[in-house]
Amino acid sequence: MNNDKLDALIKRIASEHSIVLTKDDPILMMHTLNEVLLEQNEKAHAELLHKYEAILQENLNQWQTVASKKANALISAQQSNFSKSNDQPIDQSMQLISEKIRIAINHEIRDLTRISRQAAIMNLLAAVLVLISVVIVSLMLL
Image (cartoon, rainbow, N blue to C red; front, side, top):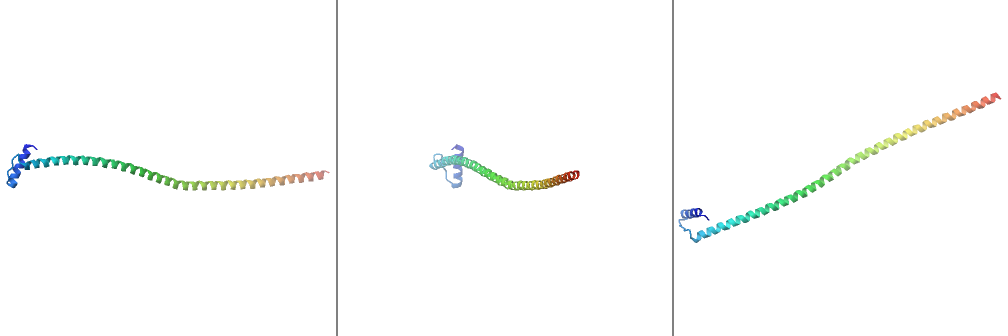
């Protein structure tokens, strides 16, 4: 302890308690010992505080990593669900479009089949008429 502080302490004790102490008084030794212990205690507390801050920072980093992983997993799951929910209407729309195309093609095939049948019947009738005409002409010529 420096002399100025010690002199200030001796004056304070004298003024507050009306006791005069000398620099070699054992009470001042106890005061100095208490100051040394307080300084050591302050250093120990500072070191503990530093360690505690380091542990808190490490835990915060770990928590941030875990939280980020969980958030990314939740976002991925949500995107997957959103994709699946969007895929269903798209699949339904594709099925509906395919069904409409199939129905339209079947309708066109039926129409073409009906027209082909009618053409075949007309060709058959024309062939029969030609045959009848040939027979009639043959009979007349004979």
